[in-house]
Length: 103
Image (cartoon, rainbow, N blue to C red):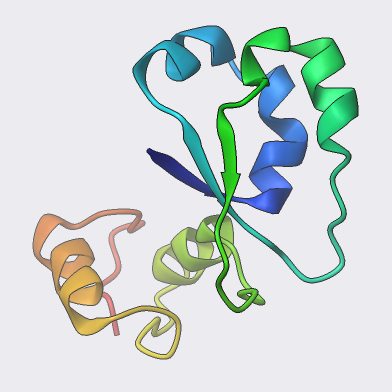
């Protein structure tokens, strides 16, 4: 599975080579507050999506991966947005930083 938020699913048809992603994995999608994606419209644009989207039954997350990356780049903490092993991995590998340490 390729995991994403519903906001990313909404834009998936405009991604580079979405068909290739679908050759490799189904999409696992978590809802986002205020986002209501019409899957039928997306399937019309990209028929390969049919039967490949699985909506996860999780509480909607009020933030996106883009927001987490931006917070890291701005030197802001992300401890309240993700689990400690992810925070540690990002810190240890210097991901998303603009020459600033992760708080």
